[in-house]
Amino acid sequence: MAIMNAATQLVLVVVFLLAPSTTMASHHGSHGGSHTTKHSPPPRPSPISPAPPSVLPIPIMAPPSAAAALVRATCNSTTYPSLCVSALAADPSSATADLRGLSAIAVAAAASNASASAAALGVGANDTTGTAQGGAAGGDAQAAAMVMRTCAGKYGEARDALAAARGSIEERDYDYAAVHVSAAAEYPRVCRALFFRAQRRQSSSSSPAPAPVATFPAELATREAALGQLCSVALDIIALLNTTN
Image (cartoon, rainbow, N blue to C red; front, side):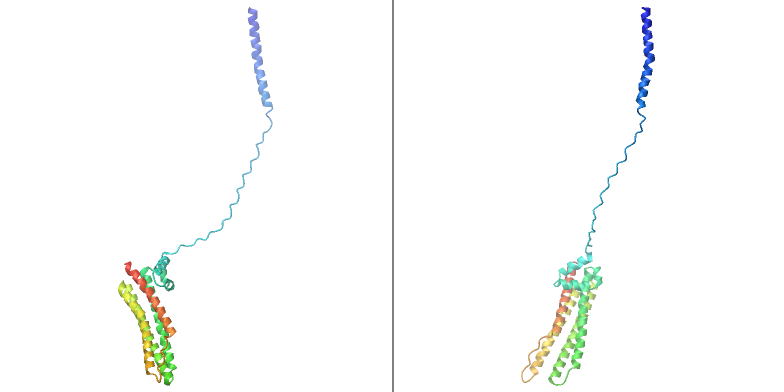
């Protein structure tokens, strides 16, 4: 029995001594094949971003200014919108004017027209007088010169009435401003009436038969219409101004 125990102990000792060497051998073997150098894979190229599509610049229209919108809205309320826009746009101050300023500009445009007509008709009257000859022809020339001179004076009065209208606008007396502008529009009509009166007198005094009444000169008719339309625009703006104040 003692011999068996001794044999068993000897076997255990042998197993104990052999086990570490075997484990170490296997451990060493596992490291033996790992000496091969491992290379990391090359970096993947980053994807190339596509070029952005070319974008054409889009023109941006500037919005109309408040002053331009006011001019457009104001002129749309008048009898002659196109004439109103052109008359107001001719004055640079319309770009910053309020409604009262626009009414003053419209009156000034009418006054400028009346002043130009007065000057032109005055020159025409002098030219007609200078070319007058004796006899019937001379009488006709003198009558025409008298009418032209009278008409020049009437357009001068229209200019003065419009200047008074501007003063009333500055004082915010819009009723009187309208009265002055209305008077200015009437003066060219007085010129027309005087022309036909002079023609009737000349016709009744002629012999042996009355001469036909001449038609109103185209130049005077054109000037009368132009001033009348500008006065109409001014009156419409003054009326609009009067209702908003």
